[in-house]
Amino acid sequence: MAGKILVIGATGNVGRPLVKALLARGEAVKAASRNGKPVDGAEGVVFDVADPMTFPNAFEDVDRAFVMLPSGYTEAKALLLPIIEAAATRGVKVVLQSVLGVDADDSIPYRQAEIALEKSGVRWVVLRPNWFTDNFVNYWKPGIDAAGVIAVPAADGKSSFIDARDIADSAAAALTTDRFDGKAFNLTGPEALGYAEAAALISEAIGKPVAYQAVDDDTFVGILVGAGVPEVYARFLASIFYPVREGWTAVVTDDVRTLTGHPARQVAAWVKENAAILKG
Figure 1 (cartoon, one colour):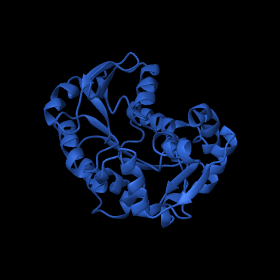
Figure 2 (cartoon, helix red, strand yellow):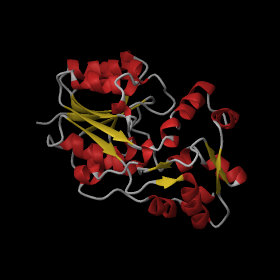
Figure 3 (cartoon, one colour):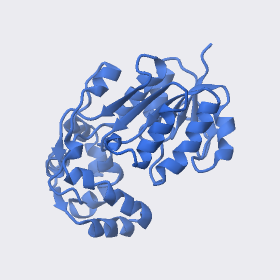
Figure 4 (cartoon, one colour):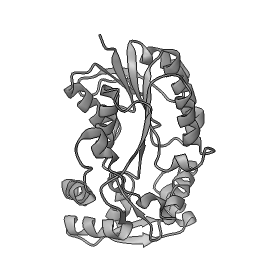
């Protein structure tokens, strides 16, 4: 009999649809979060990525795990390695949510976590998503509301934004078959858009002007800190716009279809679906 699947970050943008997808497949799911409450009918379990004391109970009766670092954390290697070790000690298969492009340099902390997983001896799959389409609500909506502006340090760079539900669907596939074991997948949307193009789509959907304003890193950090984001995390977010400006996030792959059997969702469709939220 198959064991349970541990979903770390079960209340997040990827975790919640992943829990639903796994339950729909008849899997037994342990939904891990800091409050430990049940998620959409799945068993809840307390899990704090920064507190290894919460790991043993979370991994009990588990044979597969979706491992990711929730937003707000910057120490990828330091926080992920103990989780990977806890999984490896128990022979648990790991589907790791990493970040697009980290395989370009083995010194990148996320890449070092990937390498540790690859060498751990357990079955593994690595998912490297690009920028989330959902960021337009989760991060950039305050600027849209206040000034009709998306102000980020992306210059003219484009990104193949990915819907978090496509990441969840990809993770569900990786967790419920062994066909993808030992492989890494670069998850992107079906097209690369600049922030000006995305702003135009949002403007049309909500019926009011929304413009893209290219800013420098310090201005961007100041905006985030003013909105209540800790400066350390604000500077981390600023730093990851460098690959955008360099054109590295414009890559488009078909890996979502490879994993899920369906094409990745378009930004325009996501914007229409979320127009009420973006407008409200």
